[in-house]
Amino acid sequence: MASAWPYWLPIRADLYGISPYGAPQISDVVALNTNENPFELPKTVQDSIVSRIGEVVHGLNRYPDRDAQVLRSKLAEYISKTTGSSVSSENIWAANGSNEILQTLMIACGGADHLAIGFTPSYSVHPLIAQLTRTPWFAGTRDQDFAIDMVVAKKLIHEKNPSLIFVTTPNNPSGTSTPLADLRELADLAGQVGALLIVDEAYAEFSEEESAVSLIADFQHVVVVRTMSKAFAFAGTRLGYLVAHPAVVNASLIARLPYHLSSITQAAAEVALDYADLMQSEIATLVSERSRVFEAISSMGYKPVPSAANFILFSGFKDDASDVWQRLLDRGILIRDIGLRGYLRVTIGTPAENDQFIAALREIAE
Ligand SMILES: Cc1ncc(COP(=O)(O)O)c(C=O)c1O
Image 1 (spheres, protein in one colour):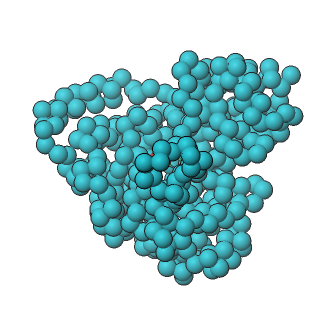
Image 2 (cartoon, rainbow, N blue to C red):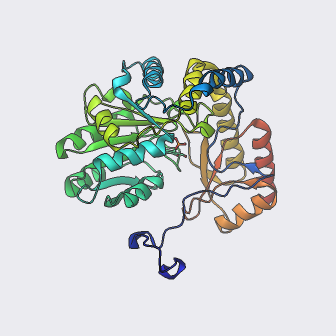
């Protein structure tokens, strides 16, 4: 693999074998592969964003507010309202997508002598960012239902003594949730070994489970990572954030790049937060479509995993999962082969897209 790189490029040896992260971006297909929200922004919000950007555009000769004060206050308001836990802008840090938040956290709190652990299968970007920041990573496991076995987790945490513990809930790719009681126990264990518990809640708004934000008052080392990419249908803007003790925010300030969040991004996200209810008005549709797609997959003899997110992982193929993936693509439906043997993941689309997926899968199943 080393030979793929030109001899003159001083790329880090530990990156030789890595391919750039990313799912295929193919045009003219029904794209159900990246857990995007399929609904376009409501027209009122589109218009308001355009008008607000019109207001900031004259000032683009200046750097943006590097601490994103207004945006962080609005995010704090949204979190306080939706989780019932009162937080302020001092508890919030924002960046270009939650991926950047994760990277900032690992730059600030990871590194060669700080072990990070996760419970796999889970979001593959966590170990990727660990590698990029030279943070050693240990992949703990989940049980056959993709739940975290607390007995196993407790043993692992005491054995490994990590600095960072990652839990994704609802989990990607399984869609399964970790109950708040288990997160509380994990927070307690993290406290015992002096670790941060990083709860990735990218899909929280699709779930009934209470947010881990409620743990922050009792456990100062709990960090909740959120995004506007999914429930807000705002993936193109790139806006993620964390909710945590102000010390975590201060550490993020050190690790962030100066002026990382453009004035345009901040303005667009502020408007979206003013219209939070309208922006999220399709969540109910996606949740009811999730049940419909689940039933359809199951009625064909496949085995879907119960999901609290906007996607479903399923198995039970007669052929190789990658064959089924290809045959769906041949019919114009792009879903995700996440490299988990025997499983594929489909994002919930619009009702019409879901119909197309169901019809194509039925054809393959026959
Ligand atoms: C669990 C999880 N966390 C974080 C992200 C990153 O989201 P973004 O960078 O768009 O905020 C994703 C994206 O799919 C995800 O699945």
